[in-house]
Image: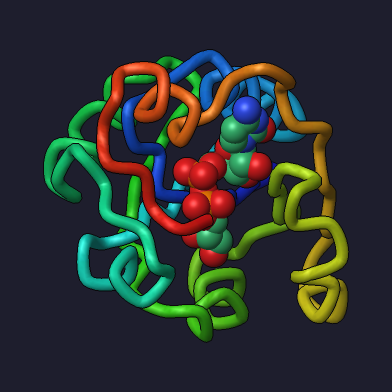
Length: 133
Ligand code: C2G
């Protein structure tokens, strides 16, 4: 079984997130999504509208997602890859190159982002408080 992993906040879930998850799952047989906790989002300088528990609940309902685990820090990826027997690490290409250190442990793939949509854009268009990107 080929196992894939990806990471993110996945707040205010939109088509860009779903397209990423769909393409990530298509690279293997099992997709683990590591979703940022509210505490880690604070470290990332993000404040998610939806709580970790609710973002986890939503992700677990997506047909492409097989498992959801918490992302609590920047430095857990190598252990996650080893502990979950991951073959492929996938991220959107806004992260291009940032996780190449994982190439010693698994395949690393950056997929093109979906243009024209982002959680920040949704918040801005709705006149909500926008995080510093
Ligand atoms: N994404 C995308 N297209 C968009 C928006 C997002 O493909 N229009 C992808 C991002 O590239 C990322 C995933 O969807 O791979 C989740 O995006 P975010 O929730 O914004 O994740 P981020 O805050 O970038 O957290 O350790 C890594 C971090 O947790 C990533």
